[in-house]
Amino acid sequence: MKAHDGMYIGGAWRPAAGPDVIEVVNPADEQVIATVPAGTAEDVDAAVRAARAAFPARAATPPAERAARLAALRDVLQARKDEIAETVTAELGSPLAFSQAVHAAVPIAVAASYADLAATYAFEEKAGTSTVHHEPVGVVGAITPWNYPLHQIVAKVAPALAAGCTIVLKPAEDTPLTARLFAEAVHEAGVPAGVFNLVTGLGPVAGQALAEHPGTDMVSFTGSTAVGKRIGAIAGGAVKRVALELGGKSANVILPSADLARAVNVGVANVMSNSGQTCSAWTRMLVHRDQYDRAVELAAAAAAKYGDRIGPLVNAKQQARVRGYIEKGLAEGARLVAGGPDAPRERGYFVSPTVFADVTPEMTIAQEEIFGPVLSVLRYEDEEDALRIANGTVYGLAGAVWAGDEAEAVAFARRMDTGQVDINGGRFNPLAPFGGYKQSGVGRELGTHGLAEYLQTKSLQF
Ligand code: NAD
Image 1 (cartoon, protein in one colour):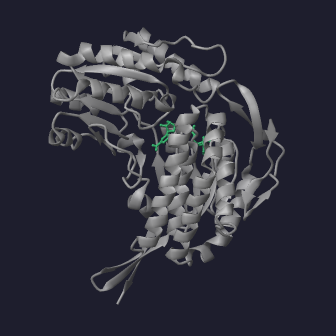
Image 2 (cartoon, helix red, strand yellow):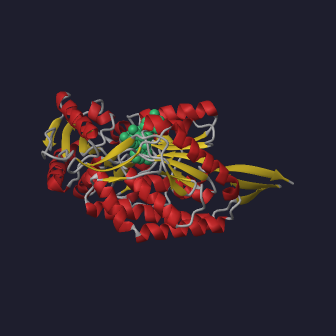
Image 3 (spheres, helix red, strand yellow):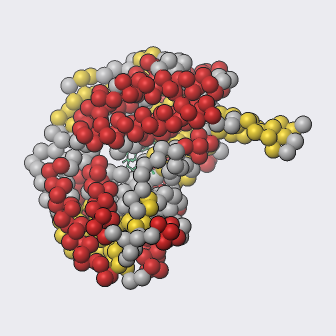
C-alpha cells in the first residue's frame, strides 16, 4: 500500500489543502493498493489560479513549440508504456494484455496525432477580406471517468495543449494512479509550469468545484449522462464552453447479406472487452428473424469462450449495478443464454459474460446503459424495423452495420442517429471525430474536430 501525497499544481507536487484521502482498490482482489489526497475546493482554486497565470504565455506560444512538447509527451508515454499498463491493470482490473494493447497504446497514438495536428493545423485563415484567427478558449476544467483512464485524459489534454489552452484535470476517483503517472509524464515532457495541473478528489466535491469555478472558461466532461446534465447546466448558467461525452446504448445491426458468424463474433468481443465498461460498446445486437436462432447460438458460444479471461468490473457498486440489470432482464422475460447474475468468483468484482435472447426494444436492458459484460440480442422483421429499433433509445454514441456489400451498410449507417458507425468491423482511427447524437453528448473528441472544441475564433476585417 502506497500513500501518495500532493497535487500537481503550477509545475510541482504540492501538499493537499485537507487531510482526507481516497483509497484505491484493486478490483481483481479487493485489496487497497494506494491512497491519494481527496482534493477540496481550495485545491481546485489553487490549480485554477496556476492555470490562469500560465495562460497568457501559453496562448502566445507558437504552434511549433506546442507540437514539440506534444511529441515529447508522446515519447515519454511510449517509454513508460509498461508502467502505464501495469498501473491501469492494478486500479481498473483489466487483463494486462488488454492494458498494453489498448489502455497504454491508444493514448500514445492520440498524443502523436495531436503532435502532428499542432504543427499542421490552420490556426489562421482568410474569409473574404477578413483574417480569422483560431485562438485558445482559455482555462479548461477536464473531468474524466475511470473506464479508459488514460485515453479519456489524453483525448482532452492533448488537443487542449495543441490549442494553447491551460488545463486543470480532475480524474475519476477509482483510477487516480494513472492520472498521477500522466502528470509525471507531462512534467518530464517539459510542458511549462501551470499549463497542466492535476487535482484528485471526489466528483461532487472537487469535480463540482472545478465546473463551478469562475476561473475556468470551459468544462470538458466525460462520464454519465446524469452528471453530464448537471455539468451542462452549470456551464450554461455561467455561459462557459462545454463539451460532454456521455453514455451510450449502441446498436450492432447485422443485415441479412452479412457474414453472420463474423459479425456475431466481433460483436460479442466488442461488448466483452474491458468487461463491458465501454461507452461506445454495441450492447444491442439486431438480427433478422430468419437468422435469429443461429445468431443467438453463435453469441452464446462466443460469450462462453470468454469465461475466465474477462477482467473484473471497476468496483463493488458497479458489480452490484450490473447484476441488478441481469436480474431485471430475467424479470422482464428475456431468455438467458450465457452467464447470469451469480458472481463467478468469491473475490474480485467479477460478472460472467452474459447474453440475453428474446430481448424486446422496450425492455430495460435494451434501453439503459448497463456498463458491464451484458449483450442483448434483438429480432427485427425488415430494414425499417431494424432502423426503428436502432434509433429507439435516448442515446446515439456509436454503432455498427454489417452487410455483404459495403454500400448497403453505408446506406443504413447514414440513417442511424449516432455519432460513429463501424462498417463491417471498422478499425480504430485516432483522427475520426468521436461523440454523441442526442443524450450521448455535445461536441466531439479526437482529430481536428476535437482540436476545434478548444478554439474560439477572432476575425480581423481589413
Ligand atoms: P460519472 O459521471 O459518475 O463520473 C465521471 C467523472 O465525473 C468522475 O471524475 C467523477 O468524479 C466526476 N463527477 C461525479 N459527480 C460529479 C459532480 N457532481 N460534479 C462534477 N464532477 C462529478 O461516470 P463514471 O461512472 O465514472 O463513468 C461511466 C460513465 O461514463 C458511463 O455512463 C459511460 O458511458 C460514460 N463514458 C462516456 C464516454 C464518451 O466518450 N461518451 C467515454 C467513457 C465513459
